[in-house]
Length: 387
Image 1 (cartoon, rainbow, N blue to C red):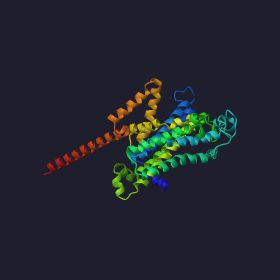
Image 2 (cartoon, rainbow, N blue to C red; image 1 turned 90 degrees about the horizontal axis):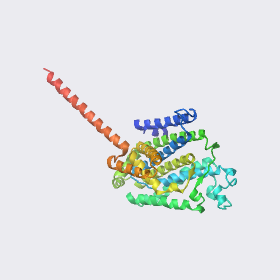
Image 3 (cartoon, one colour; image 1 turned 30 degrees about the vertical axis):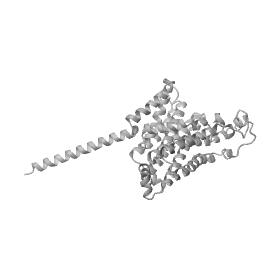
Image 4 (cartoon, helix red, strand yellow; image 1 turned 180 degrees about the vertical axis):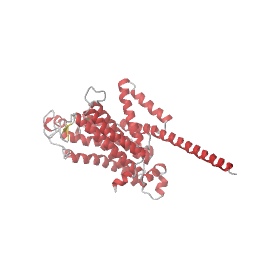
């Protein structure tokens, strides 16, 4: 039943995007592992990790598009859900270090030994097991989104006010995680990871496998998001976005539908964060910075809000451009990023994918109108030729 629900939602564009992601999940590891170094087609390990990071950002942008593009909730706090998922995975990776840390303690992470902690905090228990950490990747951001959304949506907080309090939530978490007594590594965060599921996290094979898993997970997330927005439930979400009061008057429990979408989006962002950490090798409170959440909005707007594929393209293009600009213009790349956003807002208000779709639709309408006019003239000539 679930499989048929997912498959019915796939149109041609979504199928092409999923196919490209699955193809990348095969080609990139092959170019990294099977093609020898020195060959022009060989992909270095650092590029595999870099592309994997781009895909986690694309998943985060997709999560935001689900609530902003189709439900009208402009969240400036999705960086918090991303970071919570990352911390859940980082705690598991820290527990895997064991006695190989700098201080050689088999239980306590190095930063706890440095701070003279004697016992492991209660909230660290269970993170030595992968299944528990994977569960927390969903539970931590999902629970925060549920509690936050429950009070916000029941109070009918909307628009810019909702955006402000989501940003305030993210900033509060930033300040909390910076504290050493919180038990999450303080300013330095969690790093120096060794293994994941028994595999060396620095090995080329592990890096390639992480990229492939990220690409497949992004494809599944795209399929899930498409299934949601193309269902009857998704049509109600669009109604909430465009006319919330009218949708409420029709008898729909608007706050419940917004809460469900918000929680699903938060969990998707948490998974993106969990895949981000082992590929980058660190998670610190900087991931909670409000500027990070604002960047996600830029990726989504550049690619095209309410298109699903657009945020993926936007995240990859903007972050790829950032990588290039930071190398070529290290002191001016922020101006380039800001200029890009201004230009897209002025000349491509629907984003890249939205604008292309609009132009394609106009072309199709013109072609259909021309074909109809030609058919009409042909029919008239045929009538005139009859005796």
